[in-house]
Length: 314
Image: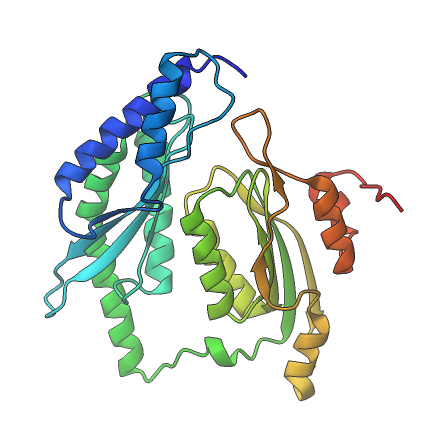
């Protein structure tokens, strides 16, 4: 394995920045680690790295959530949750993964997507690789979240006044979609949980496979697939895109039957065909993934996703 000097410096800077953030947000449940043992595990790794320039194991990626509270004039402050993941290469050659979500109605779907896009643009335009930057990004959020919360409130009031109803759960879309989404990687446990939550909310089947690369398949009505994809792509990603789309016209006379016959997957699940390697990433097990696709009548997607055929041993 390559020398650990650069990684040691990154982990030390990550811990230092996290300590500053904890001092800024000391309240109960304001800053919550994704795994309560992460910091101890990182410190153990750093102690081991002091006596060896090349270790046979890696520290965990630090991930956590920060709750920001905003007063919009109502009795209850609005809560914005900020999800953060530090890549091993942050800050030397990479930026942190960060995105905003709203669990209690502080932002509607449109404004949640808008602020995540604005956040992504801010990071691309203002973050200097090689320097810790999370404090400045959180400052930007504190300055800009109130505007999006107010816009969301105004939009929802306008919908109520015009008696507009949310039709997502009774989607009358005339087309069924299957979206095959390819990401540079999917590591964050928070993102993975959010993807599972979205699949349930939008009545989607398919799967999410974390690792490097990360693959997501969404099956459902056109409106629901598109809405879920718009939410997912608004999060901060190194690279993510729809690699392939399949569609079929919905039979209006037997909607549910048509949807069920279109689906290749029973429900939505996270699949775990990932193997450890001697690098700093967790790569998918190509053989196991191809078998999974074949079991669900989707082996043809292997070539589309990766650009080559996978020969199975039978």
